[in-house]
Figure 1 (cartoon, protein in one colour):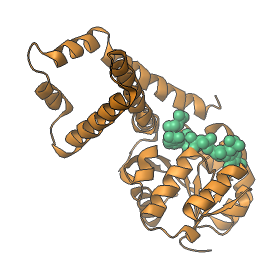
Figure 2 (cartoon, rainbow, N blue to C red; figure 1 turned 45 degrees about the horizontal axis):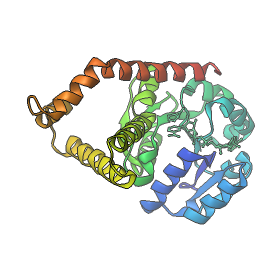
Figure 3 (cartoon, rainbow, N blue to C red; figure 1 turned 180 degrees about the vertical axis):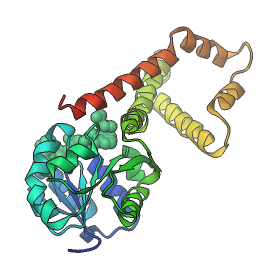
Length: 272
Ligand SMILES: NC(=O)C1=CN([C@@H]2O[C@H](COP(=O)(O)OP(=O)(O)OC[C@H]3O[C@@H](n4cnc5c(N)ncnc54)[C@H](OP(=O)(O)O)[C@@H]3O)[C@@H](O)[C@H]2O)C=CC1
Ligand SMILES: O=C(O)[C@@H]1CCC=N1
């Protein structure tokens, strides 16, 4: 068994982001394998990143030291059960990226006694700008914990979560979070166009504004509220917009959306 071979089971959107991030950070493509049933996705992964892509999960997993389970939660049970004989024989480190599915479920479906790290990355991993929450079950030793951390560090920052129940909140905040920012970008762009800006101009202004604001949040060390107040001249344009957001319940809308995503994670664990 090669010490450094990683097998991705599932080669969809999130696996692609992680693989792209790993290869960009110098991980040798020949140490990465992917199992993916969709031929076009296999071809694209091989072409774009030079990784070996196979159709069947056991083919990619056999001999790999770490397995990254990157299939949809709804098919995780069947995928794990197909890999159980191999898991029992080879005892890989199993890293799941699936929303909702618990370490106990994965361990049971793989036949028991497995070292399982449940993680929740996000798609900015592709740029090395991801955020990943991680939780390890009791079978994971210190070396395996470091191995999972270093895998996800190649994709961005990592945060270990002490209580597995909180992984659904991590999923709702940072796993799904990029989509909320993209939705805000869509809405700002459409609103700019409604005020008469050309689509290209609206897009350029919105994306540079989000990029600049994210850099200020990250680099200034100031709380978001302080940065917001500095933009908000008394009686000015920002105040008019912020008062409109507050009057329309933006904070409640965000709170309810994140609660809905958290609940959905719990449902996925129940096969929903
Ligand atoms: N997208 C995101 O931003 C994030 C996703 N995740 C998690 O990552 C996982 C994958 O999500 P995402 O990448 O979005 O989903 P995708 O549907 O894009 O990727 C999953 C891939 O796995 C394939 N697959 C299905 N069955 C098997 C199998 N038996 N062996 C190997 N591959 C198989 C699917 O093929 P087919 O389409 O034919 O079923 C599909 O191409 C999910 O569990 C999700 O919760 C976590 C963090 C963020
Ligand atoms: O939408 C989902 O279920 C996955 C998990 C987090 C982001 N995408």
